[in-house]
Each structure stands twice: as structure tokens, then as C-alpha cells.
Length: 363
Ligand code: NAD
Image (cartoon, rainbow, N blue to C red; front, side, top):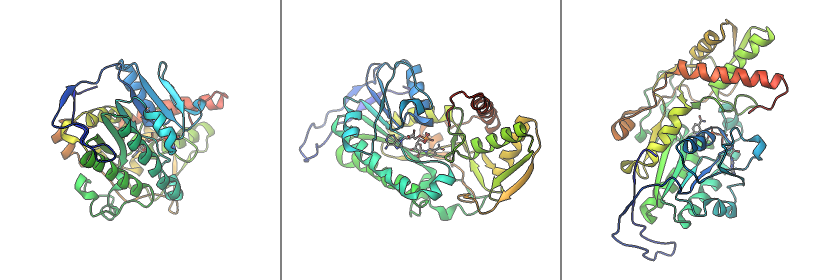
């Protein structure tokens, strides 16, 4: 862990009885304290699990509703459980004995998924609702929630050259339908569990995360993985064309996975960020059309471009204003996009070839 934790007083239990008063006991997170990570069969939580294991944490409980063989990464030595965290009993079992709980489980995907399956996205509210309550009742010291830039007011994102979004832009709220509103309400749960019950919570609003061990095919993949795969496919099949969702002018920032897990750790343990939603994203703005060019350069190919204007494309532009994270942590995600994309492309190409060879792959 990057920081030392203070255990703040737990003011009240569920019935409002005073549990302890005016005591702030300084503790550190020990390498044998139990860390619980929800959604660990997926992309980011899978990488987070590996990150903590690499740091020498010996008691990590990783949980996902997918069967183990479908997990993107299974870290050796980690207790890996298949449970549906939208169910109360599973959430209670998951959080038993936890010192820290990281909830990254959600039914989600790229624009193609979140525009089409709003009900599934909204239903992730059950996961956070049960997990935060279970973490609190288990006496966990800290709770992390993975929010999203989709919680921001969509009316501020109508222009590809939009100004970067700062944390205060979330209110007045006009979130992305379905997915964004679930994130916003779950953020509020985190704020109130601190304000009313004294459990330290951390809330990061991720801006598009990409990298190896992420979804790269099947409908839930995001733009960098989808476009890298299309370039690889075009090269392999000799059909030198690429179909781009929207007119290609949409802009986004993309955060490399290594920056994301480091940022989660820093935000979780920052005493000046308790229950405070903060951007976790790169501030390097990329147009989708340029993303295609970079992927072509990596692949050493030039493709004929077509644009599907009816495909889901999300807001016109979105970037992360990193003033707050720089001020609070003196750090921001800074892997250059071209560098991260090259690593991601190489990994997807390997996956693509493995699949062709009949081997098991992530997507
Ligand atoms: P992912 O889909 O790869 O991982 C999410 C995992 O949660 C999946 O493995 C899924 O099986 C699991 N899950 C879903 N419902 C569950 C349930 N009921 N019980 C247990 N597990 C369940 O997604 P990701 O990209 O790793 O995203 C992780 C978190 O970060 C999510 O909360 C997501 O909304 C948030 N986020 C991601 C991005 C991004 O660009 N990837 C951007 C903003 C926010």
C-alpha cells in the first residue's frame, strides 16, 4: 500500500448506538490483513488483485460471479470465489473479516453495451448496496467504489472539443442514462456511510481504462481494444477495411491499466479524499479517428475507413480535468496513449492468434 491508514472512530452502529468515541487509533494495513476485491474476474479488479499480490499481501479474497475458467486473470495464492455479489448473503460472506473492501463488480461494457442494456447497468446498484452494508457490518476500515465519468452531466459533453470535466461538474446531475445514474447513486451511498456511520469510503470516477487482460471482443469491449482488434483482423484476413462507430470526431481520454491500479491504491489511502469523488483518468484527449491512425501505425497497415453513423457512440467529447488529483495526490495517470496502445495491441494480437490456434483466450 502506498499510505499509512488512521482508523477513524466508528460513531454509531446500525441502531444508532454509540460504539466508540473520540478515539483515533493509528494503524497500518498489514500484509496479512484481509483485502476483498469484487469483480476480480474482470479487467480492472483482476489487475488490482495481481497488483496487491505482487506487493506481498498474503490474504486477498477475489470474487466474481463468472465461473473461474472465465476469469481474465487468476492470481496464484489468492482466495478466488465465484459468488453473485448482488445477493445479500453472498455480499456478507464476501466481506467477512475484511479490513478493506474494493467493489469493482458491475454489469458493464463499452458504449454498445451500456446504451443497449440500461436495466442490467442499473441493477448493479444491488451489488454496491449489499457490499457497502456488508463491509460496514464486518467492521471494514475502508471501502472503495469504482465510479465512472459517465456520472457526469451529459449536457457538458456535446462538443468533441469540450473542456475537461472537473469533479464539481457532476451536479446538477444529468448522468448517462442507466449506467451513469447507478454510479451516481452508489457514490451517494459511499458519502453517507462516511457521514452518518463513520466508515471511510473512497470514490474514483474512472475515465476509459484500457490495457492487456481487458475485454477485446464479444460486445462489451471499449474503443481502444475494439479498434486494435479490427486492425489486427483486417491484416489477418486481407480485407483492408475498418468500420468506425460514429463519424470518428468523438474524443475521449484513455487511462492505461497500470496507472489505474496505482491510482486506486493512492485514492483509497489518501486521508484528504475520504468520501470524495475524484477523477481517475488521463488528460490526454484523443479523437477516435486518431486512435485508428495509431492502431494502423502499430500494425503497419493503412485501411479504408467507413463510418457507421447509427452505431452507439456516446457523448461527443469527454476528458478528465486532473487539477484535483494533482493537488491532492501530486500525481496523475501519465502513460502516453501511444505507448499503452502498443502494449495493448501486442497483447490482443497474441490473443487473436491464440484463438485461431484453438487455445483459450480472455474474450
Ligand atoms: P469488467 O466487466 O471487466 O469487470 C467487471 C466484473 O464484475 C466482471 O468480471 C463481472 O463478471 C463482474 N460482476 C458483474 N456482476 C457481478 C455480480 N453480481 N457479482 C459478482 N461479480 C459481478 O469491467 P471493468 O472494466 O474491469 O470495470 C470494473 C469497474 O470499473 C466497474 O464498476 C466499471 O463500471 C468501472 N469502470 C470501468 C471503466 C473502464 O473503462 N473499464 C470506466 C469507468 C468505470
